[in-house]
Length: 119
Image 1 (cartoon, rainbow, N blue to C red):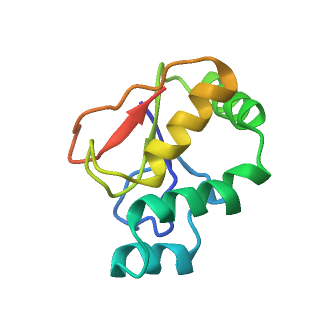
Image 2: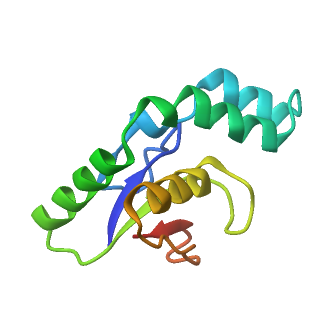
């Protein structure tokens, strides 16, 4: 499994293959959401406006596929900190990739204590 972090802060102990910092939420947005200064749903809408609207889901998906093809792995996962089922930017990215590329991005389960989506 090719592990790609989309977390703002990727811990050094995390064994990831790559980071996609352009998919990270801003530090301010993360602080606002975590502190409750704005509701999480509003934070996710703000994330879409401020981050995803400036990117191409087709281009990002192609980059992910190219990276996967260069590896000896069959799948890749997007990693962050939130548990499956919780509202988080990873799920927003997944929906954005689904709509932009007519693909399915299912929620993945816990594997080796890492939470992710499999594409």
